Length: 416
Image (tube, rainbow, N blue to C red):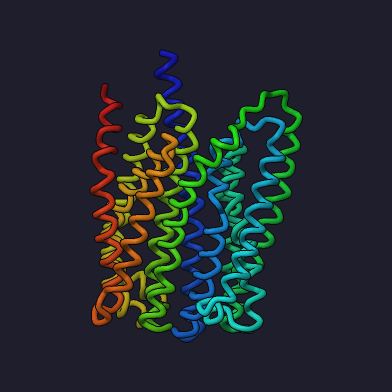
């Protein structure tokens, strides 16, 4: 009876954490889309495309700079005891410095000079650091047992962006779009950092034992899983840059909006699967039950959302303008149709991370990203925006078919 109760409680905790992280991702995604609606209504399509290139660039650098520190904190921070502050401080410092170096390197490249020319280079580096730390704080708060604070901060960030964008956009044009992203990020990160410091001080006073892994264990887990993170980061941010290069800023603006809808949904999916990693890493016996509970919830949410999005695609893109609806409707429908396969891939990666098999998770993520980027590069130009969308779907179907058997085997363990 105790075992059953413990498993049920673990399932509820996984779903609760997943709901919080997914809600946070959904809020951020919706707020981002609203901001791009405002930008599309006040700026020419080509200008929006250039701003989107800048944003894709610093989000790409910030994602690579994570070094998968957030996943490590989710896994080990709950057992850090009085060394919690040491672990959190090292994480923030490492991610911040890596983002700064990465941002400087990016603006020196041709693609960086194109998307962050002249004085924008400094703003680009600042954006890289701020966004990297802002993303890291989600994992820190969740690992410290404050997972429901995550949607609160992301809500504040989203509302602040929406509030300041019309003013800054009217005054500064495309630069206003960028500043409206960076300034709220700085403020929210500073506030969250202060609260994290308070939580860390409380943790330091607790009389508990430290259960941190050996350095070899950390490297063995984070190194391959970092490769998996790079796969996701490339998928999210390199694809829009490639599309903009191939089809121009105007076409790039339309595809960026479509791709933002995908990434917002994908962040929500990853919120659930990250909760699986958080709850299942230290409880091997509950992993099949957690997978079943999260898989059912995700299947319902993603399936119904995809159907609704496909039906409402012209209406949704029409919010950005007639040009967006006309050029992007087919691409959005195709991308949404691939979300089910994408969910299977995400669950397959989560199971491998729970099991500590980071290399296998990396292979899944990198193969999917490579297939998508490769498809975007070789798709005939005459296919226009539906071509890259179709490349995404085909890649997810192929990778999903490869991971599905292992998921089925794990789910059958629940019924024994």
